[in-house]
Length: 209
Length: 208
Image (tube, rainbow over the protein chains, first blue to last red):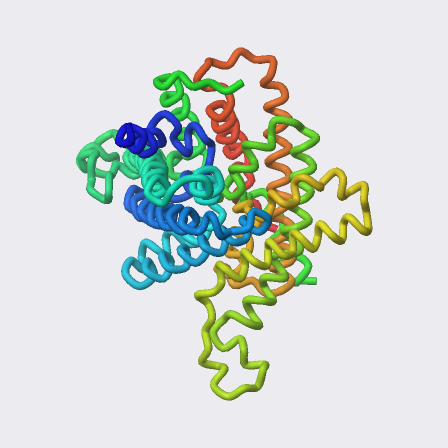
């Protein structure tokens, strides 16, 4: 029984109650860092680190945090974790941290982190909160990678920087193929995510209103 | 005169071409959650213009007089030109924003109760709006000076206001359309945002 509950806590956010497509949390960064798959991967890793960390810390302190100042306490915990990950990225993955620009810092105001801390970690044990953080983080990462895969494949003809569309098909090589530059622009991201939400909600049967 | 033209072109660029929401995706959460009614979206939009116009210059002062490398030189203490508190940027900015929101709320309550009534519920929400923190971080990244930062903050807010009111009016019309089941709510809102964003892209290339 306990195992099943733990599994549900972890697996629920992967598909059925996915943070992006169902809970509508954390959309800003989902769109901004998905031009290429490697930035999406690094961003998801950073978010998983912050989310699991903040869930564990908030849950461990849940009986000590006075409810009137809880928002500012949680923001401080999250901001500290984000500073850690930002410094780590700047030290070891400088190029990617330049590409992510301000979006690592924006994990602080990413609604997923604060939302899960408020809705789950404040009421549950440390172990469950860690699982919830991990599940939501991976659920977020999955959507990010899907959007990034579509945008990178259609927009640049590559995946993770590896050429997928054969070179000889391109116009400059005597072929007929041209990359769809629209996918690299902002509207492309909105439309891909909108279609993804449609597919996901048709499969899980979730409807609003 | 040159300065005025420069600031004006910065404002136009921030509102239309580099719209904080439609080109940088900041503030999407509240954008999607609050845009169901036109009145509330106007309230939120005004609150964002207001708070952004105040927090960006305030954060500019904090980052150039306290946090940047060598910013503490004005204290006159020896060795201060070596101090770099840049790693504290995130935590200080978010604290400033939370404090400014609280302050704006209290001042509004005293000075203009009617405006407070209409903005009231949205002000606390704004503290965790990515658009506010994002504008402050962009201001640091793009190395604006104080005038530019002020104009940038206010026009980023105006851009957000325009976008959210546009989407709210479109969603109002949408009530009478037959949208496929899985697309209702978030899905169709994202597609609409994509279309609005495409329309805004046609502004790119404008130069004053």
